[in-house]
Image (cartoon, rainbow, N blue to C red; front, side, top):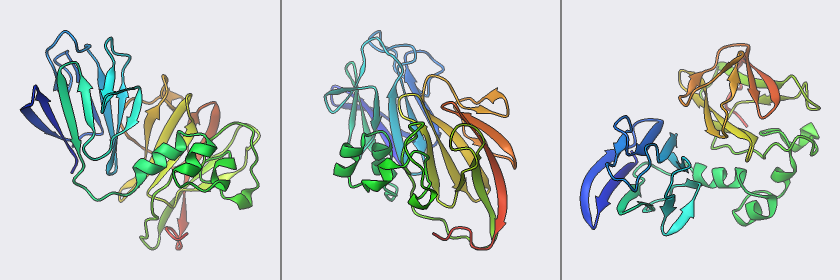
Length: 252
């Protein structure tokens, strides 16, 4: 399990295991990590944990958030990264095995040339709809990102989640959610991830000022279990999630 080590002037103040999907940092008492210092905003930053990876986001704080000396707005945390908040330091330690989602998250939020440097397939970043292969013949149109998925989950006969686009020029296209994690959305506008867990598929907001809409209602910061025929609205595109019984689920 990943953890954070909070220190000031070289003195360790506490260790915080990342057991929640969202860990908030700020001066106000309701934060998961409260730092009672005027240099820290009331709600300064948040760390979102998805599978074995963690993403730091500055919440428009007054004095900013720094990682390893560099000012950041959003950052994929890596082993031994040091988050700097005023005089306080938060060191990130990742004890869990690496599923390489940090790299895929980087790719999803990069331009195609940068993504190639990160090891992504150049072809992947020409596809508009996340998770659709070249056989779908999808061309640029609505600016969706390329697939950002980790290894397939092989679980045998089960219900396989599918997302079908029901608005826009890609209406009718389907995406089988056979991976552990699939990133959907438009960088800089709105991004969410759908994670495949033993007890179902969950959608979690990752980026954007507004949250995705599920069945006509805005989601909050927590992961939400998807039900059969739920309708998701994300980055201006409407899609339907449904479950399909498939003996080959998890195979790629």
